[in-house]
Length: 351
Image (cartoon, rainbow, N blue to C red; front, side, top):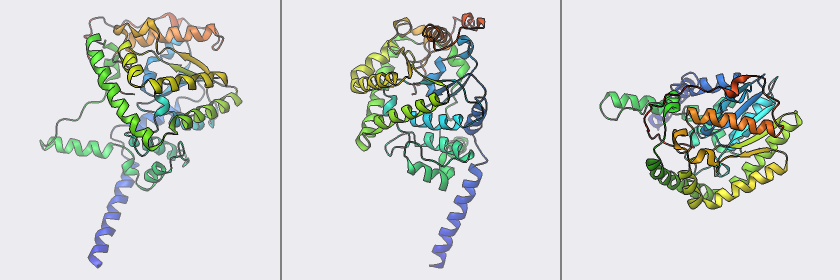
């Protein structure tokens, strides 16, 4: 019995040591990047929140002094939680641009069936560092897991063990991080895009089916989170802008076929948000972009040329609608000279 207690005691001590190290070590640099990005927001005119499709907005081309805080897989509950943190700062932005695409309302990274629990724990770790231990989207499980066992809150340890096994010849080399500069130069092959879109929507359908089975209230709660965020921003004199960036015709066709109910639900939510005063700008079906595959790095993400073109178009739209003041710089007329010799290459699509 004594040996059994010693065994569990030693295990507990080792776990606490790992947990302590996990607050100091960030192999992927994710926490450091998030903290740095958060520090750039106060005092700026605008901020971009949401998932990785935020790469389609470039503030220099919009002639707006803005900062980015979009991350791969960021759900709408995390958007609202980070907005609360920013709003409590000394000089929050006036314009809040949330990027979202159809089906975004159906994701909750803290749900039991979610494949993105690590993503939610990363956000809890960030909030913990700012003295915030609130639940995100009513999710108490990930708060508890992150607080009690922070070493499980990110992928650094998994990456370290993967690298060790690779050196021993037992695993393939770790996948390199996405090169954002290289992605800006890529263009998309329309033939490959159709095949990839089918595979993407198949994976997405399976994931959303599991999420809905265990918790069908996610879309309603996501809408309430956005409404609460909008009203708090409005009380402070700010403006919430929800933009749906363009995607390729291939992924749009597959999504409307396989996830038509979710698409219609998303559009209904946009309508209700607009009725409450949110500025909605929906370009998901924009023919000026969706059929031009040279403007995309993959089915969901604009490349550099596409992002600059869309940013100018989006900013001009907002100025025509009286949302943004007149441009005071020539930035929205300038373009980067992206090489046209970059080959067509497929990237793994992410939300």
